[in-house]
Amino acid sequence: MIVFENLSTNENIELQTGCTPWFQKIKIVDADAKTIYNKYLTPKKEYLGETSKIVYDFWKQLLSVLKEKPFSIETRRGKITAIPNHKQKLLLKYVGSCMLSSSDNSPGLVPKDSIEIGIDLMPAIKHPNLTTVMSNSGFPKQFQGDFRETGCHIIAKSCHRDHYPEPPCWFITLAAIELKTMQNVDEKHKKAYKVLKSLVIGEINYPGKCINLSSYMLKTALMFHVHGDKQCSSSHFGDCIENILSYLGSNFFNLKMPCFFARDMDTWGILFETPGFNWEFDRQLTVIGDKIGGGEVLFALLWIYFWYKSTEAAKSVLSEESCVNEHYSKITYRFELFKASVRVFLGEYYSSGKVWKVKLKRSRIRIHSMTSAEVNIGDGFPFYMQKLKEEYGMNEDII
Ligand SMILES: [Zn+2]
Ligand SMILES: [Zn+2]
Image (cartoon, rainbow, N blue to C red; front, side, top):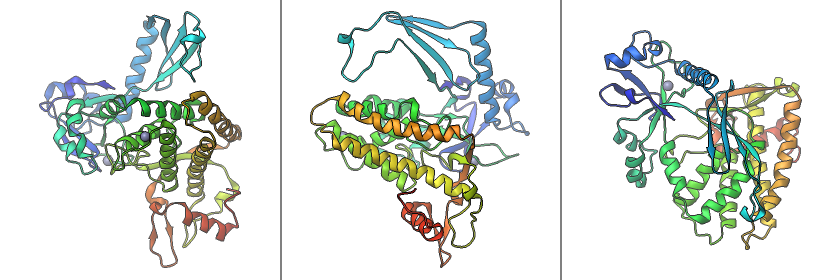
């Protein structure tokens, strides 16, 4: 996070509640701050708006700085250089200067001569009033002490509702306390996290923001596993991994993934963002009566169902392997099979050239039953599967 210090004090801004307790509107009260951020103020010059313009200008500025003055750091074993690029990501390239010998390696780690590291940066304001955040019902009260130390931030991320000409909402991010919590996790769970991370690293992620098995989901699941209502009682990290995969699978299945520090909010946000597909079959579908919904709704659901099935598959691959001995290599080797399957699927998917991005309001994913009572997304997949079978003769094996 890149923090705007001059907006991070109670004297300069006044925060107002936005769409949900986790979104806020920022009223600038200080005259100097108003002058500095004039370009981004709403028409009446009171509120900080134009979130996407602020983010865009930030990356434009960073790119021009990097082009003008190349940035690199020498480390003990190599060099890290920033590569100017047009993506909204700080791209660093690490090139090792000496070969690693096999004795340097921890089991399961593979030496690499060079690696590209993408870093997400976000313009942010340090939240000046932590008490109001802690009083939100979704905040787990036992973390108040840690939260007073780390604080939290407000970032230029939209609530996906059009407030024009009203001031837009800014998002409260709890990234600082998430980081502290992850760093304090015990060794057993650090191991579990490393193995799980190897499951999702880079190659099986869909590019851009999209519902998938993301590393943020893993972190969230791990925090629930370690600090949730049901404390971990496993003696071996292999059991923890299985437990965490079960949790992730059931969350895909039930179409919900609560944030750890904002339990009334979903890590997937207000919208379901999934890939879309130019699927002849899906165009014929409608949202009338008792039917499944529009084609894009169906595709979004099947996309999430794919991740549920994948997580289950990873779990069953893992349970075939005895995890009694602490062999990372054995477990990660087993996961390769899973990763290869996902890569094949995604490869087919991209190469079809028929992909676009779908943003669905959660409220659209619903089905009217015969009694016209609304069936909520919280009911999960059995209902959708039943409807698919009835309406289109599909069965679960095909899906
Ligand atoms: Zn809003
Ligand atoms: Zn555990």
